Image (cartoon, rainbow, N blue to C red):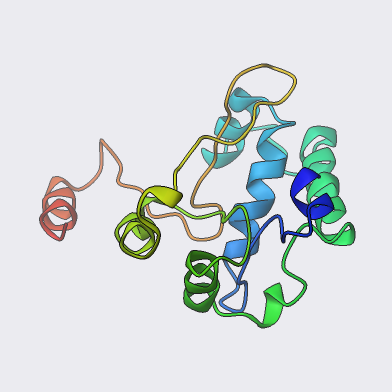
Length: 154
């Protein structure tokens, strides 16, 4: 990876909280899986399998990132909030995160930070998963009062 060859830490990751590595691993996974297969697994459809050859290829690629030193060597002992703040101070080229960090990163980095979709896999399409570790979804056909309460919490 060009960043590592240039002496930079390619991917800043703080996984002490236990969820960020799954989000980062999903970036690798998504380059290998078919979007329909992931949807089938998310919705619990019969025959869906999270241990398919494509899933395993993605997670193997993620392990390669770790083995090749592309991910923070202290990731499992580094707090998520500390990781993004260290990233904002210049440690790391990429930070797998979401839009919830936009204000804090922009405040610290100004025009030196940007956001982009993960690279595409063989399909040539962006496949992105989220909430793998703790899904919170609202059913369209479920409790309408529950939906109103959740939406009013924003």
